[in-house]
Image 1 (cartoon, rainbow, N blue to C red):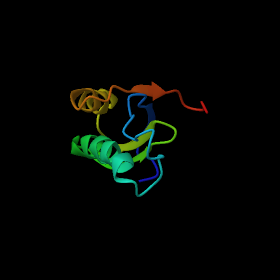
Image 2: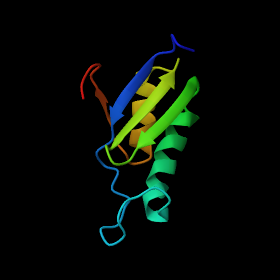
Image 3: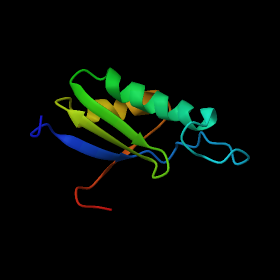
Length: 89
């Protein structure tokens, strides 16, 4: 699995936390869009791993699927994303 392609995606539209209820793990409002984004990424055939960092508005995905398939799936669920270039912070 160490040779499995992986990508970091910027998902700027993740705004699922209420300003009244601070965003923190375990907060139901916080976790809803995380589950949606992770589930969308995992639905793509060939996905090995998908993880979301809400505070950074990023997702990491790994697998043999075409990159565009993940981007299309996120677009379909309302969370357009862009690839973060390798080495970018």
